[in-house]
Image 1 (spheres, rainbow over the protein chains, first blue to last red):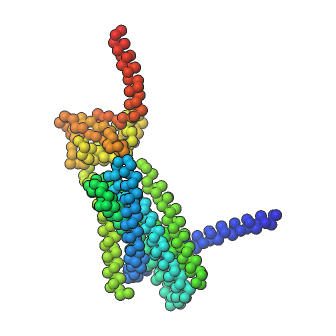
Image 2: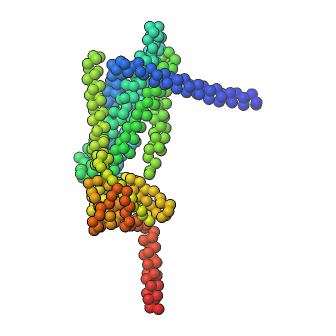
Image 3: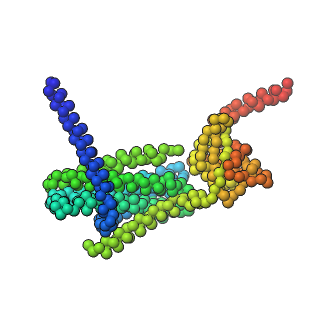
Length: 264
Length: 160
């Protein structure tokens, strides 16, 4: 009886210690990435290449999803607002929900599954094929050469992707609301402009997307660097990247929303 | 892939991203107008601000001339102290009346300024003396229900 209890407690204890230990390693890795960022800024070509692979290549999925999310918002919003006879508020509904929440959050979720998983798989495979060990042999710091450019490339791409998602979504809402259904165009835009504040809404959305970009990239890089150098290890690490960063995005979004929009 | 191709697409990406941000700032948001224009602040105390919010519009004759920049409580007067930030292009006389009104069905509240006839103009930091607070629905119903009773009382008082 006592022994069974002790086993259970030991099991819990081991998990907690492992978790804290992993957090510590991840934090040290993150700090190391920031520390060696200076070196990669001296070679901006590396960062540009990473903006291409995580930003430009994510464009299609971001733009198409943004358009469809906006169109669905337009349709559903119209259905509900119509019952209150205030279809003109459709612009406010589409713009505020995209700029404040859906833009940064959905773009970050797509970014995590499109670019985050690619980063993890790439670094995991580099480790499995001992490319990283080879760099160390040649006295090239792998954190400065491989990790830091990927971090900055993704962090720079993320706010642009979120802004394009929001802009595309508002265009989609306009397409459905004004062009298809026939909401008055003037009031659609003017009510939107009256309700959306640059600092309160647009800028806070940008801040959110930057925070999500940092979180997703840091998780993806650490999971890749930490992956066991086997095929199974890399595949597990990729899955973990998507799951952990999606949860991190949603959790951080709640915290940021609670801080930013307290309904003053 | 060629370095030049990558540079080209990253350039397109960054320009499109900045374009989207500008679209959000200028076409979707209301950046401009009062954020950059010269303003001056005046204060007004109200017995009740109702649902007035910071950044609510200040209108005169229905035209937006400023925004509410702060709402506080005055512990000496026991009244709400509202700070109004008004576009410097518009000057108002010192006997301007400020009242809290409701616009639209959704009940967005704003401060309406009605210019008086004084020659002297409001300067920065002045306080508006003539104010009318928000109408509280419960008080309105109360007046309606008990209004007749009060009228009877005054009538009977006059008779005596």
